[in-house]
Figure (cartoon, rainbow, N blue to C red):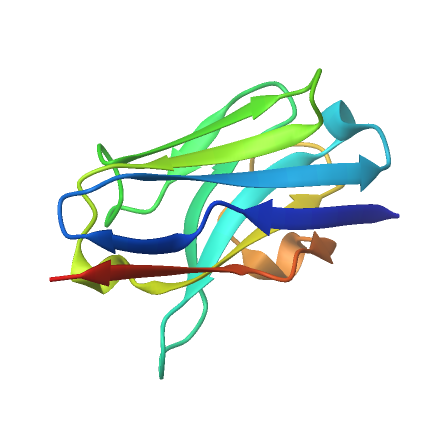
Length: 125
């Protein structure tokens, strides 16, 4: 079992920055990949970024060069640093844990096993 709790969301002006955190408990943190997904109002859930157990990263094209995913295994926490935020980044952001090994399909929500409750990010133009 893995429990995930997101924090760090809020309201920010366009061009601003936020850092989301994903605090994990339960299973050993460095035994699974961590992904970030988001759901905007009226839209499907979409992949944002993911980091494997050993630190390989993958990003959605829409956030590449603006967002940075990282993990601190000593603190059992994953992070999503979001810079140059745009109104279209407004969404509920979820972190997720994927137990299976490997980097294939890190962008596939169906391959994740545990999910947090989400944190709202609102970017005001």
